Image (cartoon, rainbow, N blue to C red; front, side, top):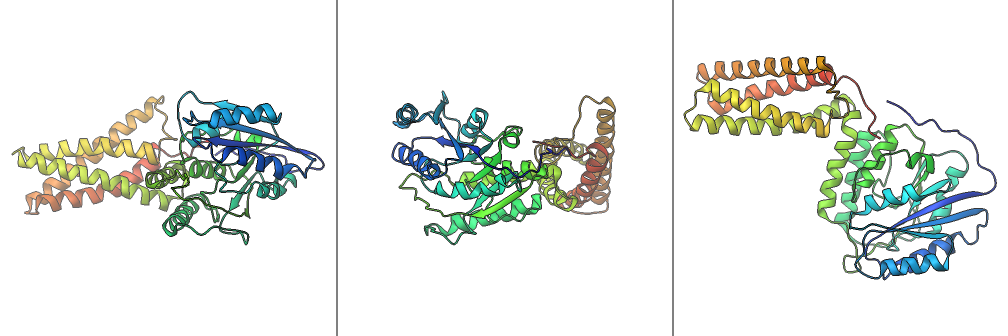
Length: 378
């Protein structure tokens, strides 16, 4: 694993911050949001402010408002996407455009108070932190009461993320994240929508960066008022937590993920086997066919969720080893299934038992032989 080495120094005097505002159809709040950011930093002449608005192909007047703000305020600049891509993609564009010492995320919807950004800068300016999270659950300040299930979902996702990252955050899904510019510009952000939050958390944790968390106020809005995040984003967050942390997780967590991977492959194995038997195909052929189909599914899920960062297909020896491993485990699976059926075991039960044994053998062999090294996916 590689780590970004940063100079731990206390910053004295002036500093600068780029506030990146992703925007999609926020004509009712964008101007107020930008003015609030300007107002928040106005009493702090020692902090140079840059505001980067990224319009994600809005269909309302957001772009015109953003361009008008850029004409009125020299600290405001505007980027625009030629098609709608999502919050993560807008942030990716904004981070590339940022030129200041520190970079912050500010949603355009006024759920977060820009005055909190000044306080969140403190650990960065003191040289204590590389990344600062603003937590909605630590604050004793103003906090609008809204959706119970959203709050519970946020806490669950934070808990799951913490399990994989070994951090003790209280609010992984928070909008307010501040970075040293060299940190955020060195990270390859892949998520285009709200998956950015678990992705960036995983990647800063994997680098061993110094992360601080401070309480902030929160003025959440309802769906009638324009809230965009939905249920599918919650499921995407679950996927992102596993995808961006799985390869670097402790062995017991990797095995839990592999139970899902192997379990899915086992169900496929069983279904194909029973379908083949129903077509009067001999047991050994049915078992072989089912194993091949399940092995392909297993492999695809493995490289997507667990081991994709370690595989090095340019090494011929690994290809040969992987081929031998698949062949050996295939023989074991077919032999166990054939034996159990031969002694009178029900076909479905025989396949389930063979698959359970294969689950352990597959995880152990893949982790120790095929994908032995941990990689950095930042």
